[in-house]
Image (cartoon, rainbow, N blue to C red; front, side, top):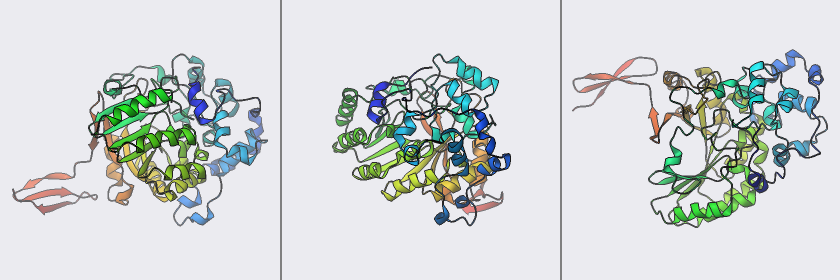
Length: 434
């Protein structure tokens, strides 16, 4: 299986790609016998905080599911180590042998894990694995991080670089598509790899090292392009870098006069919330105005740990927005999406984008019809607060950029009136003389 770039690990404090000698020994699956089916069922139920009338004051430190997972597979790991993001990163589950110790793998999953080759690497933090169902291969979170053979099927219209980013890359690791903003890819390393990743052609393969010389070239391009006012820092996951390295990057960008504000794209609050330390937040505060886009997919990711991570970021004055990819069998129904956006608001995260899944090679089993996304937006509009409704967009293949889609609420026109349909399906008139 392909390994990640060693330089990326050196910046985030992960010294070795493989777990060091102190890594816990995985226990046989039989050790989970003490967890009864009833308790396993309750472990996946929504937490009290996210239920009607739930109290933030009663927020537990972790879910029952995570506690049971730790007791079964990491009984000798201290609370301090478990909550150390460096430990979590060092002890990622990456191989077939590791995954079959904690999961009952299907034949299809085992075949995909055995395939290897040039596929997107497998990497799952112990914390995120604790949220994954041991037995149910169709559980939403499991489908997003455990590979299947569908990844090796090339569907119609799919491409390695469906958004045409490579064609808008003036210097390595910098995408300049929109006139006033750029995408700066600082690393290709993620603590957990999403199986539908748009940049699966490069992430985890050492394609983007956070080297000073490469980043300096990107900074110089931004300096000599005064139309750039907004820089989105992404990757990989920028928060996989050390505080010091990320501070240096933000400082260099802040010193460019025409750069007005910075954004960071990350999935850490969902897959490795332990990364959001008080020290990180103190450092980020120095670089305001700073915004953060967080990749949340499903209500099961909204745990006490994620709540604490988002609270720390919000308390540091960082506006938080979520970016959710619409995925078949994961979040492609109104009930699941409504639960997610409600929980996000409680965590002080504004639902921002709902993305139609990009046609990356091997993604057909994840993609839904566009009509499904419109159905979900229509099921949210008028049935919950407007703050909870994301913008449904397609990032147009070939480099066309984000194109918003909305259900058609304009019925037509009669004389000087425009006819509008509300969320109940009722038609109203608005005077609009032409």
